[in-house]
Length: 173
Length: 100
Image 1 (cartoon, helix red, strand yellow):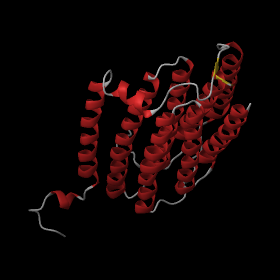
Image 2 (cartoon, helix red, strand yellow):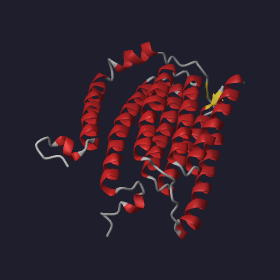
Image 3 (cartoon, rainbow over the protein chains, first blue to last red):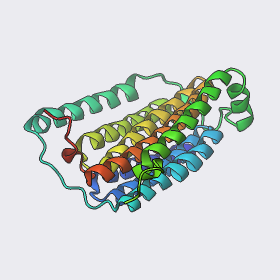
């Protein structure tokens, strides 16, 4: 019962923040709602017994990635979002279609999915077992991701650097 | 005991919010944040299914998704900075050099 209450509270916070991300017109407000979404998702992961994933979610997503976002918003001095007029097709077909589709999907999921429930905290999700899996069965993908991150770092430096900084021989203006 | 379907509905809702934001937002940074929202929705269903079938591989996969998302955020934000430097705008409607 307590788990259901916790799930509902943080699920509602999560959904409300996700909607707030869409409603807000200033990017910094959207970024802060995204932080709320990620924080409450970390609580949902804890309820599912995934302690390691919850910790990484807070550190990497709510910490590192969002700091990057907020920093770029500050750096580029992003102002208010101007709305463009949507097409008629989206108004008359898209929105009702999405509504019907999502309600149908939710109904099917709630009524026809398996009757088994997720026991909160029942799953072993501690770092020791994750590491056991990560460094044995998934060793090759893990090493490949390190190369990916290395390439991403180099790409970010090359892309974000000023053009004149990359060519030291050229005269500076 | 929370049924699996509740988690899936929340995950689907987050993903739908991400898709909607991707389509209706005009600020390139907000569009990028919508992509992160979609990835989060997928991660939630990964963890929920991992708990359902007592398979830890799902959580390991979430770890990989996070690595890819971090790399994507670094490169994507660098691209946004480069776009802003050349086009002086963050509005995707004004970044239309490829438009016919």
